Length: 58
Image (cartoon, rainbow, N blue to C red; front, side, top):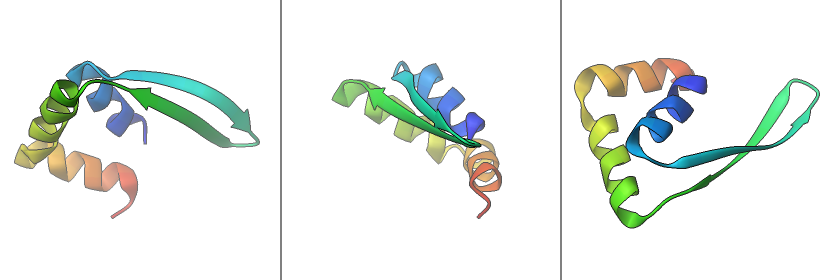
């Protein structure tokens, strides 16, 4: 999951840790439509997409 959050930060999205309950971490993300578009473009890159799928266990 950290890889996905790192990509979001790289795109300019603000990622905030809201809580830790046991081993589970809960985050909020905030950004503009432009940052969402940059994030989507990052995720469309084949190497990045494969890395994100691995991080998500897909």
